[in-house]
Amino acid sequence: MVVSDVVIQILSKLPPESLLRFKSVCKSWYALIDDPKFLTKHMLDSFPHKHVLIKRALTNDSGEQELVFSILKFSLYRSVSIMDINLPFQEIDPYLEVCGHSHGLVCLSNLDDVFLVNPMTRQFRKLPPSILISRVDPDVYSAIAFSIGFGYDAKSSNFKVVRIVSCRGNFVANFGQMTRVEIYDLSKGKWREIEAPLFCDRAFRTPTFDMYHEGIFYFWGYGESRLSTADHIITFDMSQEVCGKISVPESYDDKKHKTSLGILNRSIVLFVYPFESNEKNIDIWEMKKDESSVVSWSKLLTIDPTLGIEHPLLFVSSEELLMESREGHVIMYNTKTQESKKLPIEGEALYGRTHRFQAINLFIKSLVSVEGGRDMINYDI
Image (cartoon, rainbow, N blue to C red; front, side, top):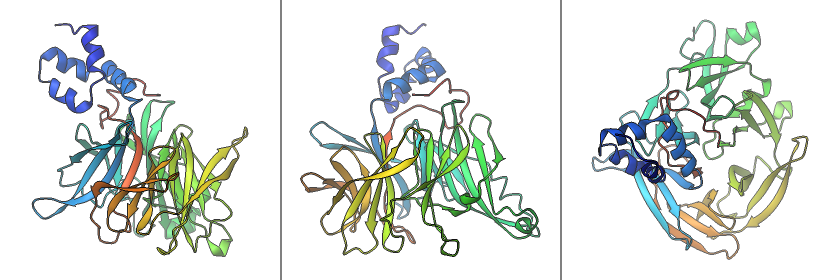
Protein backbone atom coordinates (compact mmCIF):
# COMPACT_ATOMS: atom_id res chain seq x y z
CA MET A 1 0.00 0.00 0.00
CA VAL A 2 1.44 3.36 -1.10
CA VAL A 3 1.24 6.21 1.38
CA SER A 4 -0.27 9.35 -0.16
CA ASP A 5 1.59 12.65 -0.38
CA VAL A 6 -0.97 14.28 1.89
CA VAL A 7 -0.38 11.69 4.62
CA ILE A 8 3.40 12.06 4.23
CA GLN A 9 3.06 15.82 4.60
CA ILE A 10 1.00 15.44 7.79
CA LEU A 11 3.24 12.80 9.34
CA SER A 12 6.41 14.77 8.64
CA LYS A 13 5.17 17.56 10.91
CA LEU A 14 4.44 15.31 13.90
CA PRO A 15 6.88 14.94 16.83
CA PRO A 16 9.04 11.78 17.02
CA GLU A 17 7.16 10.41 20.04
CA SER A 18 3.95 10.32 17.97
CA LEU A 19 5.63 8.80 14.91
CA LEU A 20 7.13 5.99 16.98
CA ARG A 21 3.63 5.02 18.06
CA PHE A 22 2.28 5.31 14.52
CA LYS A 23 4.81 2.79 13.22
CA SER A 24 2.49 0.09 14.55
CA VAL A 25 -0.53 1.35 12.57
CA CYS A 26 0.36 -0.55 9.38
CA LYS A 27 3.33 -1.91 7.44
CA SER A 28 3.36 0.97 4.96
CA TRP A 29 3.60 3.56 7.74
CA TYR A 30 6.33 1.53 9.44
CA ALA A 31 8.35 1.45 6.21
CA LEU A 32 7.73 5.15 5.57
CA ILE A 33 8.86 6.32 9.01
CA ASP A 34 12.05 4.25 8.63
CA ASP A 35 12.75 5.59 5.13
CA PRO A 36 15.86 7.87 4.92
CA LYS A 37 14.04 10.33 2.64
CA PHE A 38 11.22 10.70 5.16
CA LEU A 39 13.72 11.12 8.00
CA THR A 40 15.35 13.97 6.10
CA LYS A 41 11.99 15.61 5.36
CA HIS A 42 10.98 15.25 9.01
CA MET A 43 14.27 16.87 10.07
CA LEU A 44 13.72 19.79 7.70
CA ASP A 45 10.17 20.30 8.97
CA SER A 46 11.36 20.05 12.60
CA PHE A 47 14.24 22.50 12.21
CA PRO A 48 12.21 25.69 12.86
CA HIS A 49 10.90 24.25 16.15
CA LYS A 50 13.74 24.58 18.63
CA HIS A 51 13.63 23.46 22.26
CA VAL A 52 15.71 23.77 25.39
CA LEU A 53 17.08 20.49 26.76
CA ILE A 54 18.25 20.25 30.38
CA LYS A 55 20.23 17.35 31.81
CA ARG A 56 19.73 16.79 35.53
CA ALA A 57 19.83 14.05 38.17
CA LEU A 58 16.80 12.81 40.11
CA THR A 59 16.29 9.98 42.60
CA ASN A 60 14.11 7.19 41.24
CA ASP A 61 11.70 4.89 43.09
CA SER A 62 14.59 2.55 43.93
CA GLY A 63 16.41 5.33 45.77
CA GLU A 64 19.12 5.67 43.12
CA GLN A 65 20.05 8.78 41.21
CA GLU A 66 19.44 8.59 37.47
CA LEU A 67 19.96 10.85 34.50
CA VAL A 68 16.88 12.70 33.26
CA PHE A 69 16.49 14.85 30.15
CA SER A 70 13.89 17.61 30.42
CA ILE A 71 12.72 19.20 27.17
CA LEU A 72 11.30 22.71 27.59
CA LYS A 73 9.01 24.46 25.14
CA PHE A 74 8.10 28.12 25.69
CA SER A 75 4.80 29.52 24.41
CA LEU A 76 4.26 33.01 23.02
CA TYR A 77 2.87 33.95 26.43
CA ARG A 78 6.05 32.60 28.10
CA SER A 79 4.40 29.67 29.81
CA VAL A 80 6.57 26.57 29.67
CA SER A 81 5.72 22.94 29.00
CA ILE A 82 8.15 20.32 30.30
CA MET A 83 8.64 16.79 29.00
CA ASP A 84 10.83 14.51 31.15
CA ILE A 85 12.64 11.63 29.48
CA ASN A 86 14.25 8.91 31.57
CA LEU A 87 16.99 6.76 30.08
CA PRO A 88 16.69 3.53 32.06
CA PHE A 89 19.96 2.04 30.85
CA GLN A 90 22.44 0.81 33.42
CA GLU A 91 25.41 2.28 31.53
CA ILE A 92 23.85 5.77 31.30
CA ASP A 93 24.54 7.24 34.74
CA PRO A 94 23.94 10.83 35.95
CA TYR A 95 27.68 11.57 36.16
CA LEU A 96 28.00 11.53 32.37
CA GLU A 97 28.34 15.05 30.98
CA VAL A 98 26.87 16.49 27.80
CA CYS A 99 29.69 16.97 25.27
CA GLY A 100 27.72 18.51 22.43
CA HIS A 101 24.52 17.95 20.47
CA SER A 102 23.39 18.19 16.87
CA HIS A 103 20.30 17.26 14.86
CA GLY A 104 18.61 15.65 17.87
CA LEU A 105 21.60 13.54 18.93
CA VAL A 106 23.32 14.18 22.28
CA CYS A 107 26.84 13.06 23.19
CA LEU A 108 27.43 11.97 26.80
CA SER A 109 30.82 11.08 28.24
CA ASN A 110 32.99 10.74 31.32
CA LEU A 111 36.04 11.20 29.02
CA ASP A 112 36.71 7.44 28.82
CA ASP A 113 33.28 6.09 27.80
CA VAL A 114 31.39 7.91 25.06
CA PHE A 115 27.68 7.48 24.33
CA LEU A 116 25.46 8.89 21.61
CA VAL A 117 21.82 9.24 22.63
CA ASN A 118 18.64 10.25 20.85
CA PRO A 119 16.40 11.24 23.78
CA MET A 120 13.24 11.11 21.65
CA THR A 121 13.71 7.56 20.30
CA ARG A 122 15.54 6.46 23.49
CA GLN A 123 18.26 4.96 21.34
CA PHE A 124 21.75 4.92 22.74
CA ARG A 125 25.06 3.67 21.44
CA LYS A 126 28.36 3.18 23.22
CA LEU A 127 31.32 4.03 21.01
CA PRO A 128 34.40 1.76 20.80
CA PRO A 129 37.32 2.47 23.16
CA SER A 130 39.89 5.12 22.33
CA ILE A 131 42.71 3.98 20.06
CA LEU A 132 45.06 6.31 21.95
CA ILE A 133 44.18 5.19 25.47
CA SER A 134 43.15 1.53 25.12
CA ARG A 135 46.41 0.50 23.43
CA VAL A 136 48.69 2.05 26.00
CA ASP A 137 51.91 0.26 26.90
CA PRO A 138 52.72 1.55 30.42
CA ASP A 139 56.44 1.11 29.68
CA VAL A 140 56.11 3.51 26.75
CA TYR A 141 53.61 6.15 27.84
CA SER A 142 50.42 6.89 29.72
CA ALA A 143 47.49 8.73 28.20
CA ILE A 144 44.58 10.60 29.77
CA ALA A 145 41.62 12.09 27.91
CA PHE A 146 41.22 15.79 28.68
CA SER A 147 38.34 16.88 26.44
CA ILE A 148 35.62 15.47 24.19
CA GLY A 149 33.39 17.25 21.69
CA PHE A 150 30.60 16.17 19.35
CA GLY A 151 29.21 17.88 16.26
CA TYR A 152 28.23 17.68 12.61
CA ASP A 153 30.39 17.86 9.49
CA ALA A 154 28.15 19.48 6.85
CA LYS A 155 30.72 18.80 4.12
CA SER A 156 30.55 15.02 4.43
CA SER A 157 27.06 14.85 6.04
CA ASN A 158 28.62 13.04 8.97
CA PHE A 159 28.56 13.24 12.76
CA LYS A 160 31.93 13.27 14.52
CA VAL A 161 33.37 12.97 18.02
CA VAL A 162 36.76 14.57 18.75
CA ARG A 163 38.82 13.55 21.79
CA ILE A 164 41.94 15.38 23.02
CA VAL A 165 44.37 13.13 24.87
CA SER A 166 47.37 14.14 26.99
CA CYS A 167 50.40 11.82 26.94
CA ARG A 168 53.09 11.31 29.54
CA GLY A 169 56.20 9.12 29.78
CA ASN A 170 58.72 7.77 27.27
CA PHE A 171 56.47 8.57 24.32
CA VAL A 172 56.87 12.29 25.00
CA ALA A 173 60.63 11.92 25.57
CA ASN A 174 61.08 10.06 22.27
CA PHE A 175 58.63 11.91 20.05
CA GLY A 176 58.17 15.23 21.86
CA GLN A 177 54.39 15.13 21.50
CA MET A 178 52.34 15.73 24.65
CA THR A 179 48.93 16.02 23.00
CA ARG A 180 47.24 13.68 20.54
CA VAL A 181 43.81 14.03 18.94
CA GLU A 182 41.50 11.34 17.62
CA ILE A 183 38.21 11.53 15.70
CA TYR A 184 35.34 9.09 15.54
CA ASP A 185 33.36 9.15 12.27
CA LEU A 186 29.84 7.91 12.89
CA SER A 187 29.40 6.85 9.25
CA LYS A 188 32.64 4.84 9.27
CA GLY A 189 32.31 3.49 12.80
CA LYS A 190 35.93 3.85 13.88
CA TRP A 191 38.46 6.16 15.51
CA ARG A 192 41.43 7.70 13.65
CA GLU A 193 44.21 10.01 14.76
CA ILE A 194 44.81 13.49 13.33
CA GLU A 195 47.60 16.01 13.78
CA ALA A 196 47.32 18.08 16.97
CA PRO A 197 48.60 21.65 17.41
CA LEU A 198 50.68 22.29 20.52
CA PHE A 199 48.15 24.58 22.21
CA CYS A 200 45.59 21.74 22.38
CA ASP A 201 47.37 20.47 25.49
CA ARG A 202 45.65 23.26 27.44
CA ALA A 203 42.14 22.02 26.63
CA PHE A 204 40.36 20.70 29.70
CA ARG A 205 36.81 19.44 29.93
CA THR A 206 34.64 22.19 31.37
CA PRO A 207 31.01 20.98 31.18
CA THR A 208 29.50 24.36 32.00
CA PHE A 209 31.54 25.95 29.17
CA ASP A 210 32.12 23.48 26.30
CA MET A 211 29.66 23.94 23.42
CA TYR A 212 29.01 23.01 19.79
CA HIS A 213 27.54 25.58 17.39
CA GLU A 214 27.27 25.70 13.59
CA GLY A 215 30.09 23.31 12.73
CA ILE A 216 32.50 24.42 15.47
CA PHE A 217 33.13 22.92 18.90
CA TYR A 218 34.39 25.28 21.62
CA PHE A 219 36.63 24.09 24.48
CA TRP A 220 38.01 26.07 27.41
CA GLY A 221 41.81 26.38 27.29
CA TYR A 222 43.69 27.04 30.52
CA GLY A 223 46.70 29.32 30.53
CA GLU A 224 50.02 28.50 32.14
CA SER A 225 51.77 31.11 34.27
CA ARG A 226 55.29 29.76 33.70
CA LEU A 227 54.80 30.18 29.94
CA SER A 228 53.00 33.53 30.36
CA THR A 229 50.00 32.21 28.46
CA ALA A 230 46.51 33.42 29.31
CA ASP A 231 43.28 31.44 29.45
CA HIS A 232 41.67 31.18 26.03
CA ILE A 233 39.10 29.35 23.92
CA ILE A 234 40.10 26.41 21.71
CA THR A 235 37.97 25.71 18.65
CA PHE A 236 37.65 22.60 16.51
CA ASP A 237 36.19 22.79 13.01
CA MET A 238 34.26 19.57 12.35
CA SER A 239 34.62 19.82 8.54
CA GLN A 240 38.22 21.07 8.23
CA GLU A 241 39.35 19.03 11.28
CA VAL A 242 41.62 21.84 12.45
CA CYS A 243 41.96 23.57 15.82
CA GLY A 244 41.95 27.30 16.42
CA LYS A 245 42.59 29.63 19.33
CA ILE A 246 40.52 32.62 20.48
CA SER A 247 41.51 35.15 23.13
CA VAL A 248 39.02 36.11 25.83
CA PRO A 249 38.13 39.71 26.83
CA GLU A 250 41.03 41.54 28.49
CA SER A 251 38.99 42.26 31.61
CA TYR A 252 38.70 38.54 32.38
CA ASP A 253 40.72 37.52 35.44
CA ASP A 254 41.14 33.78 35.96
CA LYS A 255 41.65 34.31 39.69
CA LYS A 256 38.31 36.09 40.09
CA HIS A 257 36.04 34.92 37.29
CA LYS A 258 34.28 31.87 35.89
CA THR A 259 33.00 31.63 32.32
CA SER A 260 30.43 29.85 30.19
CA LEU A 261 29.32 30.11 26.58
CA GLY A 262 25.86 30.72 25.18
CA ILE A 263 24.01 31.63 22.00
CA LEU A 264 22.01 34.81 21.50
CA ASN A 265 20.43 35.59 18.12
CA ARG A 266 22.74 32.98 16.52
CA SER A 267 25.84 34.73 17.88
CA ILE A 268 28.26 33.29 20.44
CA VAL A 269 28.14 35.06 23.80
CA LEU A 270 30.50 34.68 26.75
CA PHE A 271 29.23 34.91 30.33
CA VAL A 272 31.84 36.16 32.82
CA TYR A 273 30.86 35.99 36.47
CA PRO A 274 32.67 35.97 39.85
CA PHE A 275 33.74 32.98 41.91
CA GLU A 276 32.50 34.62 45.08
CA SER A 277 28.77 34.06 45.59
CA ASN A 278 28.32 37.41 47.36
CA GLU A 279 29.33 39.18 44.15
CA LYS A 280 26.54 38.97 41.61
CA ASN A 281 27.44 40.95 38.49
CA ILE A 282 27.45 38.93 35.27
CA ASP A 283 29.10 40.46 32.20
CA ILE A 284 27.83 39.23 28.83
CA TRP A 285 30.14 39.61 25.84
CA GLU A 286 29.28 39.04 22.17
CA MET A 287 31.79 37.42 19.82
CA LYS A 288 32.31 39.27 16.55
CA LYS A 289 34.32 38.31 13.47
CA ASP A 290 35.60 40.66 10.79
CA GLU A 291 36.05 39.83 7.10
CA SER A 292 39.33 38.10 7.89
CA SER A 293 37.67 35.99 10.63
CA VAL A 294 39.59 37.86 13.33
CA VAL A 295 37.63 37.58 16.58
CA SER A 296 36.87 40.48 18.90
CA TRP A 297 34.56 40.88 21.89
CA SER A 298 31.93 43.53 22.51
CA LYS A 299 30.25 43.85 25.91
CA LEU A 300 26.48 43.60 25.47
CA LEU A 301 25.35 44.19 29.02
CA THR A 302 26.00 43.61 32.70
CA ILE A 303 23.23 42.10 34.79
CA ASP A 304 22.82 42.04 38.54
CA PRO A 305 20.45 39.17 39.38
CA THR A 306 19.00 38.58 42.83
CA LEU A 307 20.90 36.75 45.55
CA GLY A 308 20.85 32.99 45.34
CA ILE A 309 21.77 32.72 41.66
CA GLU A 310 24.64 30.30 41.13
CA HIS A 311 25.41 30.81 37.43
CA PRO A 312 23.77 31.45 34.02
CA LEU A 313 22.62 28.57 31.83
CA LEU A 314 21.43 29.98 28.48
CA PHE A 315 19.31 32.57 26.69
CA VAL A 316 15.79 31.51 25.68
CA SER A 317 15.07 34.89 24.06
CA SER A 318 16.83 38.21 23.57
CA GLU A 319 15.77 39.30 27.07
CA GLU A 320 15.22 36.04 28.96
CA LEU A 321 17.93 34.00 30.57
CA LEU A 322 17.76 30.66 32.36
CA MET A 323 19.93 30.48 35.48
CA GLU A 324 20.72 27.92 38.17
CA SER A 325 19.88 28.82 41.75
CA ARG A 326 21.89 27.78 44.79
CA GLU A 327 18.91 25.75 46.04
CA GLY A 328 18.84 23.64 42.86
CA HIS A 329 16.09 25.33 40.83
CA VAL A 330 16.01 26.70 37.30
CA ILE A 331 15.24 30.42 37.31
CA MET A 332 13.96 32.50 34.38
CA TYR A 333 15.50 35.98 34.59
CA ASN A 334 14.40 38.94 32.46
CA THR A 335 17.43 41.11 31.72
CA LYS A 336 15.22 44.12 30.89
CA THR A 337 12.75 44.13 33.79
CA GLN A 338 15.15 42.31 36.19
CA GLU A 339 12.28 40.07 37.27
CA SER A 340 12.89 36.44 38.23
CA LYS A 341 10.56 33.46 37.95
CA LYS A 342 11.19 30.00 39.38
CA LEU A 343 10.43 27.19 36.91
CA PRO A 344 9.14 23.79 38.14
CA ILE A 345 12.49 22.10 37.47
CA GLU A 346 14.73 20.87 40.26
CA GLY A 347 18.03 19.05 40.13
CA GLU A 348 19.91 17.09 42.77
CA ALA A 349 23.54 17.68 43.65
CA LEU A 350 26.04 15.09 42.47
CA TYR A 351 29.10 14.32 44.58
CA GLY A 352 32.11 16.30 43.38
CA ARG A 353 30.13 18.45 40.93
CA THR A 354 29.66 22.19 41.21
CA HIS A 355 26.64 22.29 38.90
CA ARG A 356 23.26 20.52 38.98
CA PHE A 357 22.15 21.27 35.42
CA GLN A 358 23.53 21.23 31.92
CA ALA A 359 21.34 23.13 29.49
CA ILE A 360 21.46 23.28 25.69
CA ASN A 361 19.28 25.30 23.37
CA LEU A 362 18.43 24.93 19.68
CA PHE A 363 17.64 21.27 20.41
CA ILE A 364 15.60 19.59 17.68
CA LYS A 365 13.33 16.61 18.26
CA SER A 366 14.36 14.14 15.57
CA LEU A 367 14.34 10.52 14.44
CA VAL A 368 18.04 10.54 13.52
CA SER A 369 19.66 7.22 14.34
CA VAL A 370 22.64 6.92 16.68
CA GLU A 371 23.97 4.23 14.33
CA GLY A 372 24.71 6.70 11.53
CA GLY A 373 25.18 5.94 7.87
CA ARG A 374 21.93 4.37 6.80
CA ASP A 375 19.63 7.32 7.48
CA MET A 376 22.03 10.13 6.61
CA ILE A 377 21.19 11.68 3.25
CA ASN A 378 22.06 15.32 3.87
CA TYR A 379 21.33 17.13 7.11
CA ASP A 380 23.06 20.36 6.13
CA ILE A 381 20.28 22.61 7.39
